[in-house]
Image (tube, rainbow, N blue to C red; front, side):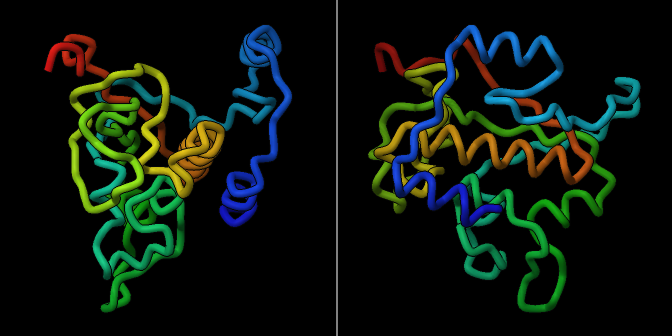
Length: 177
């Protein structure tokens, strides 16, 4: 569960894998590090209901019901409710009939001290494409933590019956800003 992922991040437990092993697992129908590919079946493109979301914004409010507010793990939580008992987070999005969640940029971006959670950035100034943003991880200084927690979020979205779209804009970079 989420507490196990967070514990692994804090303990620094390494995962043994090689790029070759990861590629062969992906070709065999498994996700990274042997996680089963649990993506929901795709429907026709005209039937897609896409919800664009910012990882931090969906759970940052004090009444979001999330334990890990503003983080990958916060958005991965299920069973969350607000003070009125209404579902929040993934449960709320699923109740809307959404088929895909499009995550606003989650690549490592510049102009933000990842340890300072009071700062905000939309993410449209990526520095390291395909490296997950650390400010959404429980331990932003541990690169494996951000990877594990993002994988946990993606698996949670799939388990909720939705697919994931990652918003990546290659002509927006932190270079030269």
